Amino acid sequence: MGALQTEIESQTIGLAAEAFKTFCEDISGMFGVDMACEPKEVRTETVEGLKKRFKKLAAVNVVQSEGSLSGTFQLIFDQEGLFTLGGVIVMLPEETILANREDASPQLAVSMVDAVAEAGNFLVGSWDRVFREGLKGHGHFLQRLPAFVGRPWDKPEETIGLAGDEGLLYVAYEMTIGSYPAFNCGVIFPKTIFGRGPDATEDDEAEEEIQETQADDTPADKAELEQADTAQRNDGGTSKSQGREAAKTAPKETTVKATAGEISTEEMTEAKAVEAQTRPPIATAPEKTEDPATGEISETIRRMAECPAILPGESGQPALRAAAPPAMPESTALRASDGLWSMGAKDVMKSPVIWASPEETVQQAVAKMQQHDTGYLMIGRDGILEGLLSRSDIAGALSPYLRSIFAKWRRPLDDATLKIKIKWIMSRPVRTVRPQTPLATLMENVCRFGGRAVPVVDDQGKVQGLVTVFDVFQTLLKTGADISTVGNAPQTPPLV
Image (cartoon, rainbow, N blue to C red):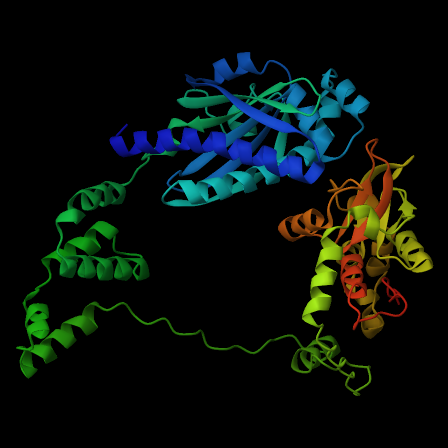
């Protein structure tokens, strides 16, 4: 391993510790738990050695890395970590988490796959932020789904992407969450991720030679080499090494004369001719072809595309534009801000919430939303939250031909989408907050992780209410003396 690869390996180990620390801070802020992670050891390892370390079940998130680290690496948690971290993510009661830690049932572990994937999303996000700031040349991290839960060592290459004979660097950590007993976790780096592996091409070797000699190039040389690289990217038949060699061997006399203002008309003409021959062709847009589709449905879609403001069958009268609200005086805005940031989730949540069973159909869920004028349903049994169903989830599951505008093309298959069970389309796992979570923290998490609704649960995991972004907006408006809202807008439009 060269000096550059050794330096990248050393930086990666240090940044990994910082990334785990950042992950703990993120989880602590989101779920209101104390969390810490301490590094234990760094050592060269093999698949057989990892098998001895993780004898029970394990949870593994495979991460694709681009940039200075090129390849895949694995974030691994032991059985206790699988059920502790996964249980905290989905807000299971403490007694359930403790019981699950001791249960070696593969069936129970499989039920935690979504929670492991969600934890992986948080992990990869934390790692990406740290490495983006700390490692020069870092591209990005991307979690490969689905996450793995089980015993990976029988077929490690198929399950988690580790070949049995490759060299590995294992960085071990001990993690604690709240009052739960500590558990083991770590990161597995294949040695090839730190530098050029055995599959490197001749172009890679040429690139290394170029990097070694580039410091000796003059500014004019560097500019020509960059032009050669650009031409190579536009011409798939020329390697990077060939492009740079052509740039180095090209006549430079014309360039020098042009800079000094001494080039003649004949020389300039000849230079332009050479440039025209070597310049990559300019990409042109493909010729437009007519859509062969005919009939009423294609005509309707064409009309919709050409006139987005007025759909077929609807009124041509344009909607009235709401007048802009008066500007809020600065003093009022300050009072509004002070009041808003002093609030917690319990101050803006809507309660009680509306529940539905995972076995209910989409049609039943739509009816329940319309009956209670709500845009969200809590999905679960016996008060235990299993998922969250929104209007967007339903819109994504239903056939568009159920809308009245497409009624003439409606088929039995479209009606069948109403019979889908909501357990297949609900969002899970669900991010939740405590009643005392500051509103600023809640909004920050919504902006970071997406979604428009966050259930509020107590210490036992019981749902107390629901906060939506619209509730936050209304609260903000009500704090201003010059702005008011009257009534509640329906959240669930009729299906058709």
